[in-house]
Length: 399
Image (cartoon, rainbow, N blue to C red; front, side, top):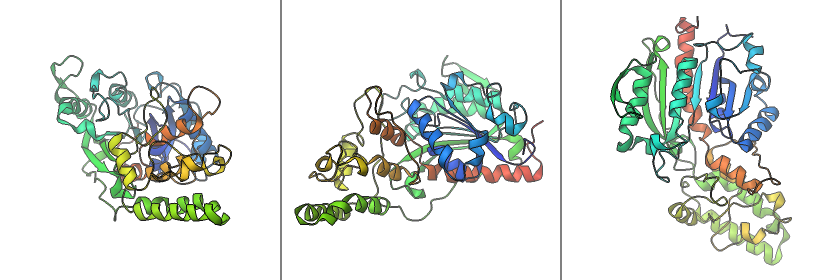
């Protein structure tokens, strides 16, 4: 193998627990690097890539980089990809640069400081575009970035990629930008529930294709697929499994478990509100702000916390808290992951012995902050069609 084949390579920044990486992997991309600053998310990525079938390329050739993306030097520092490429990665050679850059600067749940928020990584993403000059770029963020107050900021991002006049967000001065030889194919809001995710989760996604790769082709955004999946459909088997040991005991506890399960089943026939990962600076895990908690209550779910895993319930004496409160059961981390669209076999790491965060809080925050894999997959497939067509016609080949 080597750089001369038509493998669709990718690098992802702000990779989190792997939501986008899973979806792009399913779309046919082979990751050369996954960059993430959170230690628990890095542990999650390493654990799953080492264990999961189908990830053999990444086990051998992908660097999982635990670092601030501002310190990431992809043309100098990659190690495992050298074995695949036969050398360091060259500018213009990468298939896709992707990233779900931090959402708090633009989120309705935050202060929407945009460029003034220290967590704004759009500038670094654009620097990496200049450094790597990949065939395609995919940037994901919250719907809030599409608000009118950020129109100048969006125009600046687009101008940096494809050229044009825009207001520089740092100076406020109208500037003519040369661009980076890309065609911005759109900055669209995609609703996750249109693609099998049982959750209201609109995401703003920008796709840009290098002009020499796109040629006369057109990028086609994915179209909604089928009817929405309900919470009952997504969580039915796992919820039945959580109550099953108590139903099997019979007697008072058996009746109590049967009634609790039936009540939940009767209330969970809609899609979920948006999962919220929360901030490391504040408290433990719950399923979102007041409005989200009310929506979860209508679905028969207690959103004031996250349940222990089924194997830990009795040890931690959390049966009543997790399963039998009047508001309904709390969700486990695994069930929250199903709501986010993760495959059921994907595991999440969390350190139970260090720091003030318990293991399940660190795990849940990885889930709540993730990009739903099914959405990453359909957008990735649309990008892959363009890149594969270009490879077949000899367009966009690296020097």
